[in-house]
Length: 365
Image 1 (spheres, rainbow, N blue to C red):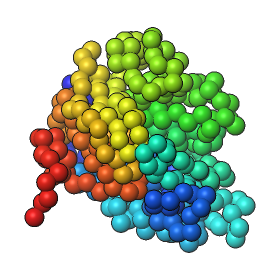
Image 2: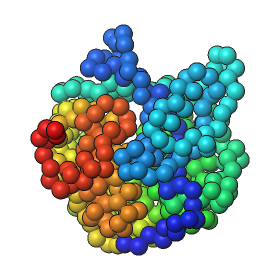
Image 3: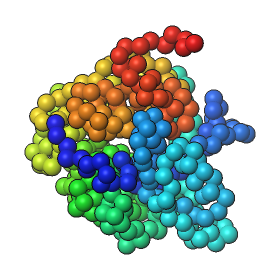
């Protein structure tokens, strides 16, 4: 494949993400409803990609987001800084003392174990990003003056409010105007679209966005709910992926959106919360590429595994422009990310490439 990436010296950032960053409160091995102590992490579907590209793969990344200017917002900023992601594009909204005008997002997530699945409980209404529309960001400055080789965003951010889905569309159009490659993770969440028009509005917004996307990421449910493509013969409970049906669906999507240069998805079969079959596939130039398979992968914390796949996949495309290599980077990075707690990856590039080369779990001394 051939992606027309910006040349060295013509950009400030390798990658910029746009999305909401939440404070994740994690009860560890316990349950949300009975916990007395929580570990704190930062996370967000789009941000996790920027952090993975920076922390694991050494790229220079930034994030377009907003916080309410209080102690929680400053905690989140500190976490982003520790992850190495540039904070200069963060917008700050005044705090009114109780969060009536704007708040910072919180996400309670328990990991699950064995037959007990992971559980999430988000508290993200009326947050800072929900109040900011396209006119509140200077996208010409970000993508024109500063410049970025790659822009990543997704359906979670688009679903937060009417203002955020307008901002996403404008950001993508502006990025394309300045020659930035755009990736988008459909990430359909029914609960988030429910109060702003449901599935019909999700399809209206995502069909408009899809016209400008170079690299689309999404599973079978995402493509059906967000873009209206059906997969023949699919398991109605989505316990397993009908791979041949998915291939046909992606081919049909590429005909509808000829701007797609690559389409990718993770392949996950959930046996228990702590044991999954894991892999990924990529469609590119009419061909389908399957990653290495990680059957019976033991999982500590599955949250963020898909985002870490996206980070590895994007890194592979940016550095090799080889679809097979890219999907292998993505699957390996996602697998390693799920062996540690929190939304974001703690893996190194060396560990990712060792896993791709078949390294086992022998002790490193």
